[in-house]
Image (cartoon, rainbow, N blue to C red; front, side, top):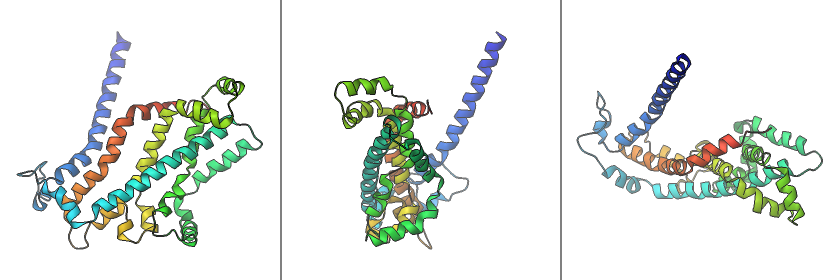
Length: 277
């Protein structure tokens, strides 16, 4: 009984800590939501109130009237869809090659590939910009989409899963006449749904929330993605904070919806991707 009580006490304490942590993480989101439904004067009332005298839904209708918000949103959608699709395909194919195909120098090449993860992005900013400028891609969405189509982290994540796929399954497919391309599309990819969902969420969140890269490559307002557009909505001398908070709520919704729909696959994919070395 003593051990059971001790175990129960540990579980209660752990759950209390997790609940407090979850509440702490959710407070900024709820405050952003409540601020988007207040008037400008009510945002700065002290002591702060969760809601004002009435819900100011007009803040959401004022977004597109004052800023080209729909264009920012669609630019982010275009970049995110492109990068998620091609990064998943390139990472899955490279991960399968490094995990299941034998060729000279495979492990050494993979180590070099992983070595690129240790180089901070900011170190290569100038060279990347010069390369995009040489190709005439600066101030276009291609400067955001093409470099992000390949990911060393995504390749590592997919390789870790494909290592767990039994080699006997691959050998049986070879006996049945499947070539490596058929094995990849018919066997490997269907088995990797959870890991692919995990990579999709990581990739989507990274691209959707990226502020630094568009800031470097884009200088035309019509090419701005959502992070740059939201930053532009903050004025030099005054800012309509309720409208900005309303725009931020809309910007957060796609990420929130994607995670809610794929949370089971996300948890399962994270657990399965690190089982073997």
